[in-house]
Each structure stands twice: as structure tokens, then as C-alpha cells.
Image 1 (cartoon, rainbow, N blue to C red):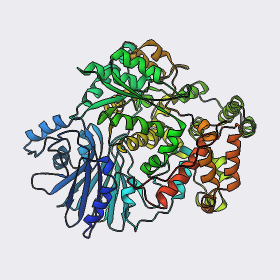
Image 2 (cartoon, rainbow, N blue to C red):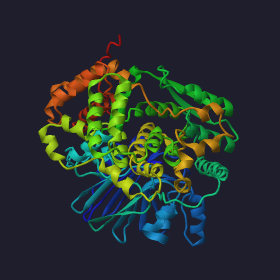
Image 3 (tube, rainbow, N blue to C red):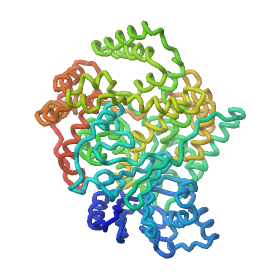
Image 4 (cartoon, one colour):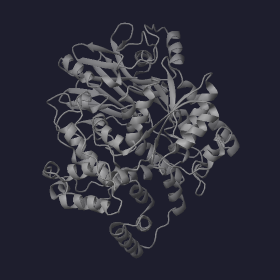
Length: 640
């Protein structure tokens, strides 16, 4: 696991610039560094040593040193690949996984990605052809940003490294901001800055003599396929999970697992316990607020498998203290509030281990979200056109004018009924609707995004999906949007901020490809989510864990914004600095704040605005250098 950076150009690049980029991502690789420089390329990396700790430095080279590679991630099948390549005459200088890349490239060119099982973002420089090949793993576990300037291309694992160049503009991309407010993250290929892009999951980028081309090499296929009985499928699910877990337990450094109390992380811990001859180290975050605390469920699994269990309780005051640090690490505005407990559980884990396994991806493969069950029940129901506008009007009025959570949910439900299935799902995933953004934007901001519909990001995937059931179409949507844009970003940034490697057995592409072709009714059965996985895990997990409803990794953000975070929100969102940006109408922002104080829940919208403002002040206007001192948080509010 490492952080990578580099510059390729038709003229000699500046190697000192690459060294400066790498210094900004030292947290991703505190164990060492390595560099390559020639007439057209400067490559750098920071290393977190996991495999071949002593000899696995980078860059790595082929036999005549005409091909060099830097790599972030893990290749789980590198031993088999290494044996195949040695049989074909290749010679290896290290025992690590990175070196298979240069020899696979010699054998297969850009098709080498088809042979990899793992998580990765890498760059391979072919000096003889003056050609750079970059690739990002299938689902987007590992990030890769890039910026093209004339005939030069700069790239890095984190945005802050690219922004180390003072010549790079810090101008906000209005379309990226527009999408961020809808989804709470900036989706690929956008970044928050004009001129900087993310390489999308499952994509290759080729730079050669100043020209750039992009190619998609993988997309999860939800085409239905013939299946046997559910009992056999449950057995196969266990076998695939065991295999995916086994390959992810290879490590020369201490290893453990996140354990939230949900079925996915619990299943991974159960698999690890079956594969290990010593107690698994497990780590859990909880809250004083019982509505969000899952420690008792995690403890049940920990007792069943005799794990070495560790807990930490997150309070609102703790969130306030860590907020500047978390904001700096994300480099972009990011408003999934579960990033806060994710940071704390990573920090807790790093005190004991260097590698953790987690349950990410179980929901997207086996139908775990309650919204899937809701959409399944509602189906393709759509009232006649005259009734739709009436439902929209009534629903909007209830959502805007009532402080009663039940009536707000009724209003949201009425609005959803008036929409097509794809737009209904886009609305479910939206935090600022199109109407809400129209009300929020100043005229200047509105003019920059006129005609841009954030809902289309979801509708396009939904419409193009080969699935024959809407449940599987929704999972197709999430694998291409929410999973890589939100969940995987959150885990990558919070773990790497603590120099911790996270591995996800449920994101093994063999397991995902098998699950994608299963019938939707095996995943969501009426109100029961993850039906097949629950059958599969019944022999492994306590019955109270199998039967409990999904809770999610939520935080009491609504309460925090009325209490510990209230002064910060009011100060940052209403002061002269925020108003002077000319992006949002001050009276609308103030009304959101007032509505929330009076009991109408506006927490997700306020948190999105607050995270944007914090990001702007800590990154866009200065530096996201995480080694610099964090600003003092605002004083805590009175909760009484």
C-alpha cells in the first residue's frame, strides 16, 4: 500500500516537483520512498510496507530497466502470476507484488489488468515508447487524480499532491459543486477543481507523446444467468467469501478487522476466525446516543469468535476536535458524516495493526439497503399525469412547512410516487433536490450550471443496465456511483490518513461477478434485505444479528448541529467570507439554519454546506497539507 505521484512530458519534467508531491502524501506511505527520473518522466512513491517488507521497495523495473512501475494497493494473486511469469523466462529482483506489473506489461500490454485480482492504482512508464499506462482497479478502491497541461501530465494518489504546483488554478468547478450538493461527494471523473480529473474505476489512461486516451476495461455485468437452488447458492456465497478473505489475510504486518455489528463486517470476522489460528483483532466505534450505537451487536460476534476486541465512543465534542483534520485529508468537500467515526475507528485500529479487513460491498452485491426494499415494494407504480403534479405539490409543502418527522416522510413519499423509477431513485439518493439547489443558488452560480441535471448520473446507469429486475438495476447504479464516489473514498481517505491499509473481501471481483447474476428476489424479498446472504450466514452468526434490521453507519448529526456544532455552522455559513463567494443566497442558508434549530431536520443539507465552506477555507484558500497545524474549532454550543 503506497501513495504515488508523477509527471510525464515531452520535455524534461522537474523531479523536485515530484518529491514535493510525495512529501504531501507521506501518511499514505510512512515506511519509505522511491523515485525514477529520465528525460520524459519523473515518478515517485511513498511506501506502507505490507508484503516483502525488507525488499519490496519501488519503483520496480523489468530486466533491462526500460519499463518502470509505481503502485498503490495489493495484488492478491501475485504469487500465481509470479510463477507463471518465471516459467516464461522473466527474472524477478524482489519478492513483492508490485514487480509482477512490469513483467505482465511486457507480456500483455494494457491487457495486463485482466489478470489482476486486487485493489490498485498504478503507473507504468515505458521509456522506449515514451508511453505511460495508468490504471485504477475495477470498483475504485484506490484513487488516482490527474491533470493535463499542454503536452505534460501530472498524477497523484491525492488531490493535495497535484495542488502542490503553484501554477495550478484553484478555481472551483461549478458542475462538480453542483453534483456534490446533490450526492455529498464529487463523482468521477470530476474533481472540485477546474482542470483536474479523477480516473474512473475500471479505466485505463494512456499518455504517449503528449496525447491522452481513456479506456474502460471492466464493468460489472448484471445480466441474469441460469441459477440452481437458493441452498446451493448460499453455500457458494460462503465459499466465495472464505476464498476472498483468505487471499486478503496475507500480510507481514499485524492484521485485524472493523466490526460494526452489521451482517457484512460480522461475516468477514467469522470468515477470518475460520482461517486463523489465533484470535482476530476487532475494532468498533460507538456513540452515547443509543439510536446510533451498535457496540452490543459487535460485542456479541466478538464473544462468539473470541476476538481481541477494542471499542471507542465518539461524542459530539470529539467530532468537533477532529473535524479540521478530517477536512484536510479529504482534499475535496465530502459530506458523508460517517467519515468522522470512520476516522476514529481507523485511528483506533492503527494503534494495534497495520492492515484491516472490512465489510464494504456486501450491500451492493446482496441487496442490503432499505431503499432497495422500498423501491421493490413501490415498483413501477406511477399515478396519472394530472395526479402527479398534485402529489408533488402536496409533498413539497409537507416537507418544507412541517417540523414533524412523520409528516416530512409522508411528504417525501408523495413526491417519490410522482416520479419514474429511475428519477425516484435519484431523488432518494439526493440531499439537495434540483428545486432546492435552484432556491439556494445565486444568479451567477445558477448561470454556470444551467441545463446540468445531477439526476442524470443515476438515470443513465439505470437505463443502460442489462438487469431484468429493478432491484438489480439499483445495485448496478450504486456500484457505479455511490460505492466508488462515497463509500470507498471515505474508507480510503480515513484509513490512509492513519497509515492503515483496508481490504474488502466483498469487493473481490469474482464474488461480485457471481452475485451480480443472481435473481433480485434472492437479494430483496419483500421487506427483507440481503435475504440470500442472511441464509448463507445463518450457520456462522447469532440469530439476533441475522434478524435485526439494517442500521447503517450513521451519526447523530442532527443533534450535533443543534448542539456542539451549532456555533461552527452559524459562524462559518453566515459570515462575510461565506457570503462573499457569491455562490449561495445568504437568506436561504440562514433559513436552513433556523429551520433546523426549530426542529425541521435540515442536517444533511447544512452538513454539505458546512463541509464545502470548511474545505474552501482549509484547502482552496491555503493548503491541504495535513502536516500543518489545524485551526482551532469554534466554541461548543449550549445543548440545554
